[in-house]
Each structure stands twice: as C-alpha cells, then as structure tokens.
Image: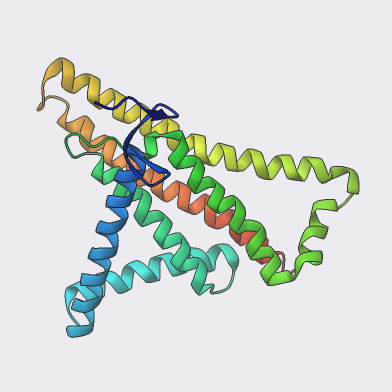
Length: 224
C-alpha cells in the first residue's frame, strides 16, 4: 500500500534517495515509448526513403518548421526540434491518459510546472546565446529602468499561466470522464472521451505554440 505522497502524488518506488511518483513514472514510460517509436520510424525511413511513413514524417517536420519560421521570421533548426519534442511529449501523455488506469500526467500541476520552467529558462538562454548577455539583459530596462520589475513579473506570470492553462484543462476533462464512467458505465461517455482526447491534442498544440512565441520573441529581438 502506498503511504508516501509528494504534492498529493503517490510515490511508486524509490531509486536510492530519489522518489519516483506515479506522474513521473507515467511520463518516463511515455518518453521511453516515444523514443522507441522514433527509433523504429527512423530505421524504417532509412530503409525505404520513399514510403508513406517517410512522407508523413517529412510533412510533420515541415509543418513544425513552417510554424517556427512564421514566428521567428527565419529558420531555427534547434527550435524546430524543441517545439516538436514538446508537442509530442504532451500529446503522447494526453493520449496515454485514455488507457484504463492511467492518470494523465498533465493533470498534475507539478508536471505542467516543470514543462513551463523548461520554457521559462529556455527564453533567456536563447536570447543570451543569440545576442550576448548584456544586450539581452538590457531589454529588461527599456524604455525606463523603473520598468524592470514589471518586465520580470510579466515573464513569471506568463510562465505560470502557461502551466495552469494546461493543468486546468486536462484535469477538468479527465475528472468529467471519470465521473461519467462511474455513473453511467463505460460506453455512454465514449463520445466525451473522444472529445477529451481532442482537447488534449489541442492543448498540446497551444502550449507548444505559446512556448515557441515566447522563445521566438527572444530570438527576434536579436535581429531588430
């Protein structure tokens, strides 16, 4: 029986001093599955470059590439990989939540906050790498040095909103489906489960799009 919890998330096992919660274990399993599928797809594409799978993979990468180019106004290969990986992870976690007994990781505020923190740290990192530390940090003091606290609060608040938006939508959708399954049986809520899956994919796209916009703003300022 599980007695220990972290932020109301039960601890499944411990690897030395590191506790592994249910959300972390589910996320690791989803990540491992994604990596395995990606490796198999890569091998299949290399063996048969012109098959349908290769065409689908190429069109998917080109779609992300176009999104990044539209936002940043120039190709940024590493941001294509970052945004594509972010979308695939969130989407895969939301798809996995439709399986029996799987709690959606994105309905845990710790998981969504961790993703938002990654985006939050990537924004200044991208700006500093593209512009240099002094030129990037200078924009926090424009047009008036007194506005520095407001710029800082703005970045923190949009990161918090990014996390809470994903958490709120996924938690509410999952709770509604669970309640309907408990009250009406398995087959009655099936259309709502399909709607919950659609909402999960949409939220993955919105999170990825907003993250790309935030990072792209730091990269665009380097060209201005």
